Amino acid sequence: MKLPRLTDTTLRDGSHAVSHSFTPEVVKKIVTGLDQAGVPVIEVSHGAGLNGSTIQQGFSRYSEFDLIKTAVESAKQAKIASLFVPGIGTSEELRKAVEIGISTIRIAVHCTEADVTEQYFRLAKELGIEAVGFLMMSHTQPGKVLAEQAKLMESYGADCVYVVDSAGALIPSGVKERVSALREALSIEVGYHAHNNLGLAIGNTWAALEVGADQIDGTLRGLGAGAGNAPTEVLVAVLNKMELETGINLSILIDLAEEAVAPLMPSPIVLDRDNLSSGYAGVYNSFLLHVRHAAEKFNVNPSDIMAELGRRQAVAGQEDWILDVAMELAAKKGVKV
Image (cartoon, rainbow, N blue to C red; front, side, top):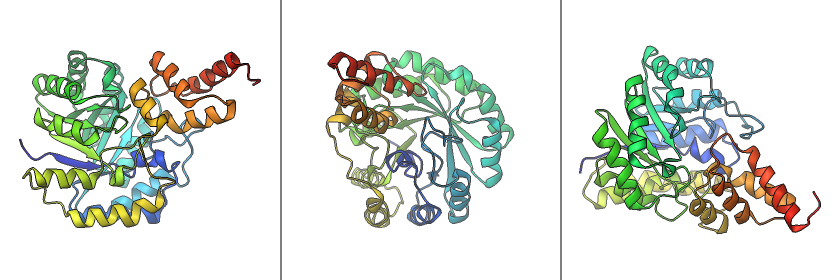
């Protein structure tokens, strides 16, 4: 097993968990610490990617471009990456992020929609940066389908394609099947991005490594959408224990998680009813806060909303369904809306 490249996405995926309220001061502190620890890639943007600050996705407290600029200025060694979702971001935002100084763009789509990414991969290569594909909600498709989609991204210029467990719905055997399919089909690198709704973020990441994943993701303290991600500091500890010496300073990461990230968290991320329901139903993790608000507003059980969204196979961009489902459930209960 070879040493994977680690990307810390606290300042992107973690944005969901703090309602997109990161400040330049927080970004500087976290990027400086991660950089000093030796983490090679640090992702910074709105949780929903470039241009994600909208009424549907949630408004940012500060301009993400100001946060990206702070990150670029704070990193001495690490690459700064951003997420890009076609339909949310446009070429204009991608160009602006590159001008500010990002080195990597992670282009994310639902796992059957790789064909909409071509122009953005082409643009990223024209701009001279690394381009990584993100196949979101990968639990919804078998490895064969994911491999076909990944090959499209490879043909467009992707340097790596990720299996992304957006709902934290996969178990190790499912991770292995999907990552193996990409590993066999591609000549480029393969990555894996975990969420922890079933308590398997670390185990699933290890399963991905066992079948050849080249890149993995984590967040400090597991801060991320829904049930959060594989904690970066735990990933490094596990890799070291398995004699895959990362060269990353674990002590710095532990202190950073405890002193810089934990105080930002509205509450500890735990596998509560809502998070478990989301993972079990296979619902996109960034829906969680919206589901909780809708459940409170219409006096319905958030688990029931999750179950119905899972039945409908809701994907990113269909957040409007959350209110529809909540109102329908309330009507069935006889609650006036």
